[in-house]
Length: 336
Length: 275
Image (cartoon, rainbow over all chains, first blue to last red; front, side, top):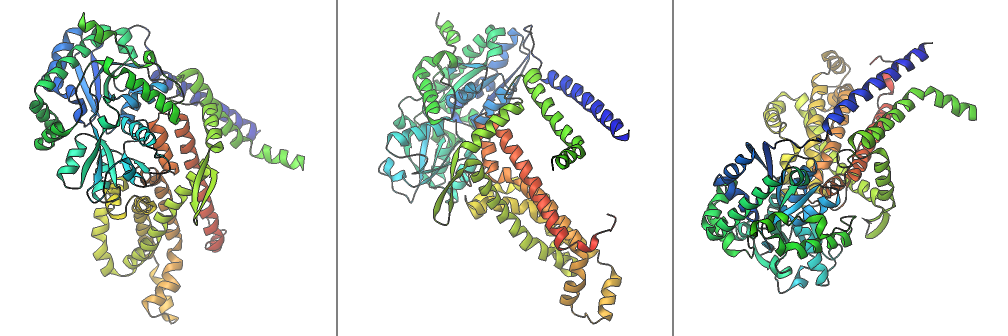
C-alpha cells in the first residue's frame, strides 16, 4: 500500500517536472514567426588587427549613425579570444554579426549555423614565430618541434596543418601542435614550453619586440591571398532585415576603405580598445603581410578550399559549397 | 535464480524508473521541444556519439610502447594520470601541513595568513604560472589539480587536529605518551582521521572538477577535459556531453571506491555509530 502510494507520488512529481521543463525549455527555444523590428544588434570580434574595421566604425560612430534610421537603437559587442567560442555564441543566438575567421565559420556552418559571409574583412596576416635560438631555413626545420596555435577549426590550425602536409610533414605525428589561445601561446613561447607559435597579428610583433622569437614564415607564403577574417551575418537578419544587412555591409566597406588610407589612426583605434602600446600596433601593421579587403569575391575559392580541407581532415562531417557559405548579393548591390 | 533477479529488479524499481524516466524526458525534450542538436543533443545522439568514441582507436604511450586502445580509454588514462599527479602532491603536502598547523600553534600562526590569502584564488587563475613554472606536460595539468585539492585537505586535517578532545591527550600522557610525535601518532591522527578522510573526499571532488580547466591549455592532446574543449571548438555538442557524462560517472566511481576503501580499512570501529 505504502509502496503504491509512493510510486503514485513519484509519478505525479515526474509529470510536474516534465511540464515545468517543457514550458521553460520551449520558452528558450521559441522561434518568432513574424519578423519584428530589430532594435538591438550584437557584434562579435577578436583582439586582432585583422578586424579593425569593426572598431573604426564603432569609434567613428558610424554603426549608430548608419543603423539608427533603420530602427537599430542599441549596438552591443562581445570580445572573444578565438573564433571557435565566437561561433559557439553565434550558434546559441548570442550575436547577430561576427567578425571572425573564415575557417571557424566553416566549422560552425557544418554544425548547422544559420548565417552567411556577406563581406571579407582581410586576407593573410598570421605568422609562424620561431624561438630565437632555433635555426630556420625551410619547413623541414619545424619537424619535431612543438608549435602552439589556435584550436582546431580555426584559420591558423587549418592553414598550418595543410601547409605542413604540403611540405611533406605529417602534422599529427611529426610536429606537436598544441591548441591554445593567444595569451597562453605567447606565455608558453616566453617560458620555452613551445618552440614556435602560429598566430595572427599583432601577437607576432609583440613577441618579436619582447626579443623572444622571430617571424620565419608569413601566412601569405603558405597560401597567397588566403582568406582570413570575414563578416558573418545571421540568416535571420538576412531574411527578415535585408535593409539592415545592406547597411552593415556598406558601413563595413566604408570603414575598411578608411583604415586603408589611415593606417596610423587605425593603429590608435585598436591600441585604445585593447589597452596596448600604440608603437607595437603600428609596427605590427608595418610588418604584417595582411590586407584589409571587403570584397568577398577575393576569398571565395580560399574559403571553399578550407571547407574541403576541414572535410578531408575529418574536422567537419559535411561538404560545403560556395552557396552554403556566402551571400554575395549585399556586396554586389553596392556596386550597382 | 531468475526469481532472485526479478526480486532484485523489483526492489530497485524506483531507482530504475527514475533513470528511465529521466532518459525519456531528455529524449522527448530534445527531439520535440528544443529541436536543435547544438542546444540539447538527444539521448540517442549522445549514445551514437559514445559508440563512435569507443570505436575510434587512440595511442597511449606506456613504457616505451605505443598501446593502441579505444580513444575513450586513452583519454581516461591521461585524465587519471593528471588527476593522480595533482592529488598525490596535494596529499603529500596538505596532510603534513594541516597536521603541523593543528598541533603547533606557532606553525598555525605562520601558515594561516598565507593560506587564507592564496586559498580564494581559483585554480584557473594559476594557468599562466602552470605554463611558466611547470610546463606543457602532465605535471602542468597536475599543478592546477593540486591547487584545487590542496586547501580542502589542509583545512580538514587542521580542523581534525584542533578538535582532538583534550581528555584523550591527557589520558595518553598519563599512560606514558610524552613526546609530540607519540601523541600525534597514537592520539591525534586516529582521532582526526574522519575529518582528514572528509577532506580527502572533498579534495578529490574539487580536483576532478579542475580536470577540465587543467587540460584546456595545451598540456596534452588527450584527456577527458581536453576532449570537452576540443569538441566544443568544433561545436560537436553530442561528443561534449559524452565526455561530460564519462567525467561524471568516473568521479562517482572514484568517490565510491575511496569511501568503501576507507570504511573497510580505517572506519570499521564506526560500525553501528549513528552518523
